[in-house]
Length: 196
Image (cartoon, rainbow, N blue to C red):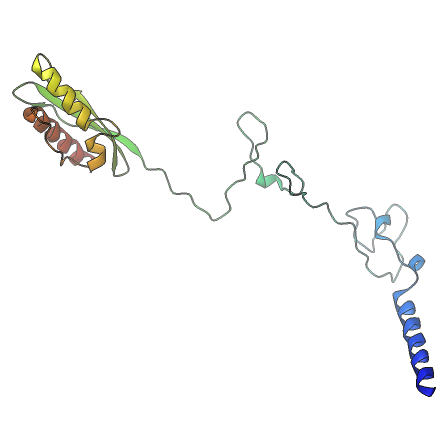
């Protein structure tokens, strides 16, 4: 009986202490009453702050909803303006991140090489140290030379020709176009030497 009485008294004392420490709801200042952005303890439109009042939470700023089209919570620096004046949605790169510079693209023209069937001249396009295109500016013309020149041009030139695939002048000779192939390789090698 004595233990039960002590337990009930202890429970009542604990409940009373919680109510006193927590305070009644009407004694607390409600955070909604404060205008947004006004620090606690400073006067606002409704009058001066209560002296000795404990700091209260102000209303939190709204968080982004997570939807892709939502712009809440974004800072102005995270948006980019397009040349037309409309705000874009692309983010600017993070500070400290560097993007690799694009390789410079240049064209180099080899010399005119004279062969027994006519002249050959090659121009290459180089991006950084890589050959990205080759063009025959001059090839022998007339009679059988047209056919040989077309075959050499088809094998070596272009963005997917042997020059781009091999990345150099070490090219196989086109069958039945030995002189034209040789002239192409000599003009190409001279262009490569200039590009280095």
